[in-house]
Image (cartoon, rainbow, N blue to C red):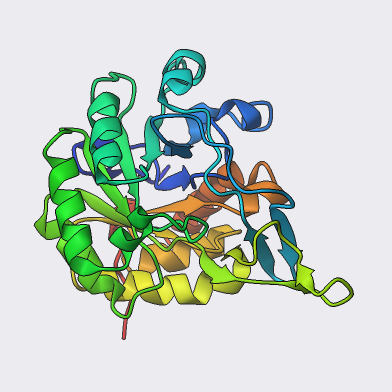
Length: 304
């Protein structure tokens, strides 16, 4: 018997709990020659702003012993180009399309959320308040509880779509930040974003990146992310989406067992473009081997 992998987040049903992480899967087109997007639970597209962004100066990527540091700086094509050039391609697929979005200030957050709400083929919004490579005022939204509360409340007021808030690990109590999102009407939270990090060229004594610091992702941060998801799941009733260093089905299963309703695959996409579909198949095989008929029986089954 084929087990059910279906999960629900907000008012959406996902055929399985495996999504792509923003910034690692482009706008779907880039990976479509490797992966049948119809197989994915959802595609989270690259962070989107009202107007195009150039991002940070190169070099923007550095591979570490067990992960990657990036300093992309949220380069993107802007709302209009996404609507006219990327969304027509994505709407051909039977998967949930989730747009990760941000603004330079709260007014821009509200405006782009309002515009995205009008796009029929966008199924959910992921509000990014946690990119470590941005230095503008909005980054504080992910770090200061009352700013986060105000931001989520005002964005919630302009969209009826499923609203996910992507949280920063740079806080003392990430579960508290998740609870604030829940209180202000978010349908789910996703965590964690990358962790600020740096790497130095000892000859030049300069950063290996175009900026002094970047965001660390990959297997190095998985144990940190797993702990954060576990703590958050216990603090909120809304779904938690786990992100951080997931490269295998076993990694994904750990997040589901501690209570994540879904997971996002990020850095692994750069190593293996088929990581997402291989993880879906691995989860399915595990459920068959364990005689679990519905993935929701596994979610939150952690035993202390």
